Image (cartoon, rainbow, N blue to C red; front, side):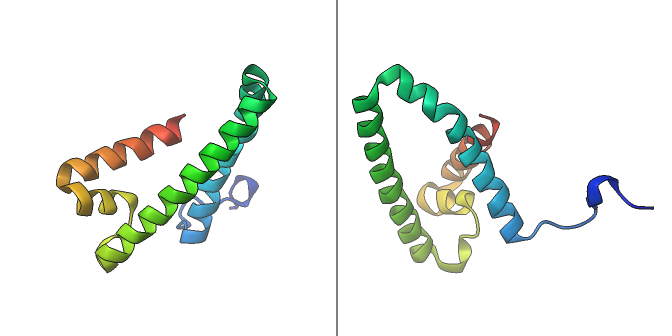
Length: 104
C-alpha cells in the first residue's frame, strides 16, 4: 500500500532536500522571532541589528568557505571543518553547536 501523504520513509534525502529543510528551519524561526525582537528593541535598534548581523553572517560564510577550500575534499560537513581547525575538540564543539541551533 501507499504511505500517508505520499511520503516514503525508506526514500533517502539528497543534498538539495537537506539544504531546503535546513533553510526552512532557519528562515522559519527568523520569520517568527524577528518581528517580536524588533518591536522590543525599536525601529533604529532593529535596523542596526539587522545590518550588523547581515555583515557578520556574510563574513562568517566567506571564512567558512576559505576553511573548506584549504581543507579540500576532506571537509564534507561543518564538523569536518571544525576538526581541520581544532582537531577532535573542534569537531565535537561544532557538531554540538549545529545540534543546539537546530533544537532552537
